[in-house]
Length: 467
Image (cartoon, rainbow, N blue to C red; front, side, top):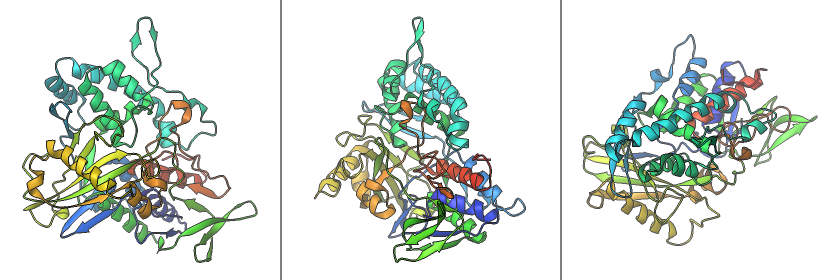
């Protein structure tokens, strides 16, 4: 196994439970990949994803790797519902909160905030998003990528009828403008895309499935942060006999007789294997974006009633002048020195290192200032409460994880002639398999967990389904 990101960890646990002898080689000093943690002065922060979507993926992992049905997800970590799912501050100052896993509640909240009919328009789009979910769930999430993925290049979003005909919608931004109309609803849809690392202007209309999944299946927080989930999966690997070698960079996959036969490390050591699973970050897709993160250590208790997640909407694009900022403020004693302090994480979806030089003198700090000013709408007393901040740029992510440019892969999507599909889970060489965010079905902890189930099934001789 190459790499110890979430997909590789989940695959290692499944394979070891099935009786395989598994060794994981990781270039970094720890596990988790992009699911990292920063600690200082009693504060702790998730430096990657902060929320868990589709928690059933990890419930399945822990059930399938347990002994005698014991050791479920909830027995090793505390999984909490986040309700409201999110609060929102629009550019015009309008504020509202959306309940978790309640389509009717979302409709009512939008009507109250944006005017009668706004909720209905949003609900109609979510009804069409349900169709996208139903027709793409198996081929995009539960099965390995088809040998001929051409059908997935067609966007399954059933656009609203205009006159006698339905007209294809070229992008998520075009869908929002055409079918939602209200600038607040357009900002809401754009915000969902950005949180998943997508530019609404280029993402296909099928990206409506992302808010549909959240509003249908809910959003969860793992007590102790997402790093606690990574730790639980790592512990399950160790319990099933997986061996780990940290600080061991793999430089190439060794081939013999036309198939993968092991790996070569940077020091020249060759480790033989019957099967190689590669979980390293791959070449980004043209549309892959990155994340800029500001970690805030705050004096003063977290105010009662504070939403776990607040989105301060800007331009609705990966725009460094008017950023859309996601603010995570978990009510978690494990992430603060005491109840007289609070930790918060600000995240902005941006261009990766390369198109933007995040290492240019003063550039990152100036952008962090802009981000911090923007969230004054969510934390109005921020200037008085701030003890210190830590800034993490795409260049920092690239150095820590090996991801080119610090790009963060988004989940796979149908449409756009296949531009948002990832590499298939079978590598180009027999005996080589690909797992994690750079492989099908794409980025995010839930999708990485699904890629692990697919790869484990392929190695077991199955068709490659997350069963």
